Length: 228
Image (cartoon, rainbow, N blue to C red; front, side, top):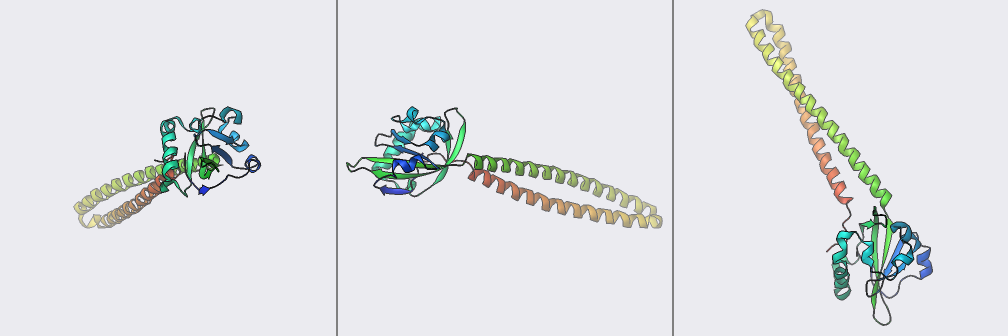
């Protein structure tokens, strides 16, 4: 759950500022127990502050992240590893009702006069934006699938048309001079069929490029969790 935006901060913002903050604010002490949980955090997770204060912060994480979270936090506390300093990212929020929300997380490290080191997380609710992005990705995928089906149909028709033009050319050749005009028409049909194939190929390339872009968008919209 850790990222960091202000390493070595000596004190967090005043509690009153946290209480009125639009973003969720969660502070933990040197034992990784929750020491502050503002109203925005209550709305984001669905817990009252009284339910979480004094408990290990891992209760707020998705179940699959809880087992390693203490060691992850303690490793950073002892070493200050740079890979989680000065970064921000989207993370999944495991709500009280077992639904999943999403938030943009950054972290401030605080050190008390006695040298105890805690953290304060600032989380901007991104749930609605995440939902819209996911919906957009699905719509784009559906559209690309529809285009792909259409190009498959066009390509099938082009192949059949080309086969008919070949058969027509053969019959025209058998008819000699009487079939010469028909042979010219057959050649034109074949040319149109080949053009249709080329256009279909171009559309298929565009669709494939679109699929790659959608896949990249979907990957970027996927929360990264706590990291390693």
